[in-house]
Picture (tube, one colour):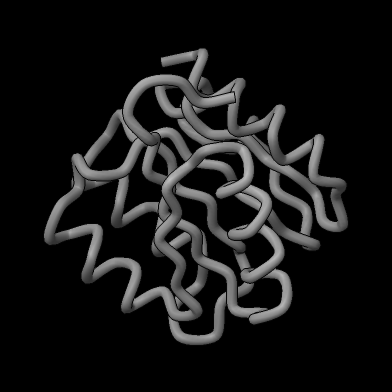
Amino acid sequence: MVSGSPVKILLVEDEPPLLQLIDRYLRRLGFEVETHLKSVDALRNFEAAPDGYRVVIADLSLPDMPGDALLARMLEIRPNLPILVCSGSPFFIENLPPSLRRQVAFLQKPFVPRMLAEAVQNLLDSR
């Protein structure tokens, strides 16, 4: 799926088994993945190098900082950041400002690997 230099993805998921599963699958597709169980750790790394990531994949239900707050902060830093929200909770792209709708996608949990691959590729293609 990925050609040329690896595309780096920042993955934030608080469920270790799911984090490992998504990480392993994305790596098999050729992506470079940085994983975090906590929002604050992910945000710290993102703030240090916001242009180092091509896509952020994050859950909404994170214990230390809600996923929507994390993503809002990341978008303040880098407004054109492609984001994939993966959650078991409903999320409506239509509730976002129109200027952000193109770069944010939602994938309802549970999902199969093919759905994840398609969602990431669609975000990359839209850039």
